Length: 186
Image 1 (cartoon, rainbow, N blue to C red):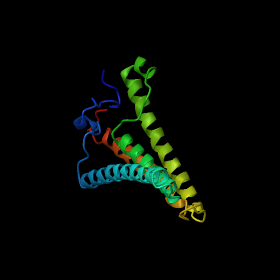
Image 2 (image 1 turned 180 degrees about the vertical axis):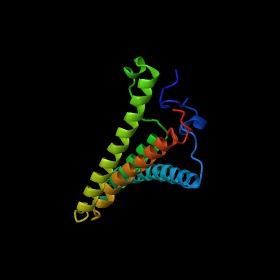
Image 3 (image 1 turned 45 degrees about the vertical axis):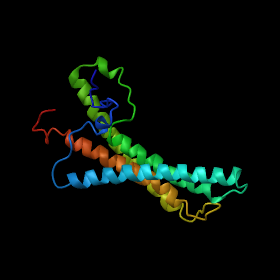
Image 4 (image 1 turned 90 degrees about the horizontal axis):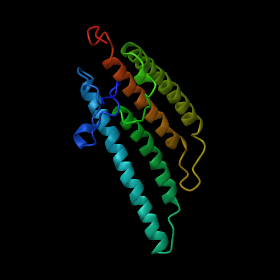
């Protein structure tokens, strides 16, 4: 059964993992595609780095009998970026879970209204959480990590960037589903 808001439309094949909304058209389309590619490649590269650093530390600790004290700290910092960039990419692809048991029992007009209200609420939520993440990022610049002495603002910036990207994806989705964009059909 097809989901009302296009969520869970993925069949699991690699070709079906793209967003369920139509590709954006116009001058910003290329920029949005480039941003999506950078977002996913950066998250994937970060994940590879986390695994490589962890394996390096395991080999050092158990085979060479010495530990790289910086390794778990760096892996944790990179993992924060992987989490938030991955969450944003998953949001763009509509892969986050949603529960619509009660909504499916409603009529089509009420379902459409609830979907639009939910999308607007999520946009406000992403905007507010982005604001909070920026606030904590700025306030944590003087706090340094114990081993590498890197400001924690670089770690907290992952949340700010991740939620800002989710906000951008949400605003693009709202614009694409706008009745004005579709000639009044919605």
